[in-house]
Image (cartoon, rainbow, N blue to C red; front, side):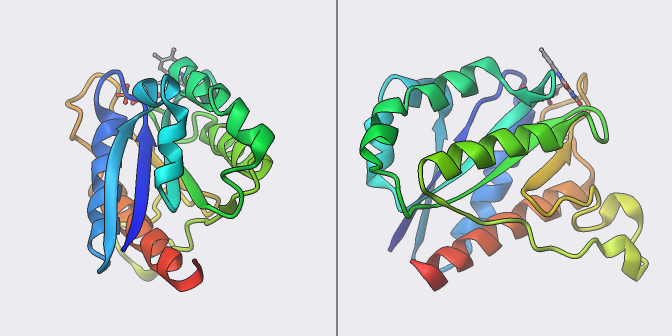
Length: 186
Ligand SMILES: Cc1cc2nc3c(=O)[nH]c(=O)nc-3n(C[C@H](O)[C@H](O)[C@H](O)COP(=O)(O)O)c2cc1C
């Protein structure tokens, strides 16, 4: 059994919804236990991370980066960084924001650098955009075209579970690919 933590921060629920789609995809891989963990809770108990084989980080994009509470979680891992206790764990990240681009790449990059400083192994999002194969844009896997991690687009004022079908599909595929990779290499 491999244990995977999906660590998220969400105020209005969109990021939590995508986290649960990622979890569904990961949990569809046999012998995978995937749990959602709130970044604000983890900030007060960072040693909880030691009980997992792998992490998927999820934050809304706030002003081109991770949200403040998500950064507080990251900063709370400083003691784990000094002892390199997370070295060799598998990691990836996703972000949710309301604009099509919205500087989401910058959020993924800060997650990537965080994981590299901890000595983790980063898994991307190797999913071919399906619109090239004639699938309508909103329904297409990886419709936003992000390989470094998962990007999804929320309707800022809409319900938390209202996403383009393609983004929901991509989130599940991303979770599944991550769990398959976890079993393959760890
Ligand atoms: C302080 C703040 C900054 C934001 N900055 C961005 C941004 O840089 N780019 C963007 O596309 N959306 C931005 N947004 C929109 C959020 O990313 C979006 O509403 C997201 O769905 C919020 O996640 P949540 O529903 O999980 O809380 C911002 C929202 C807030 C509150």
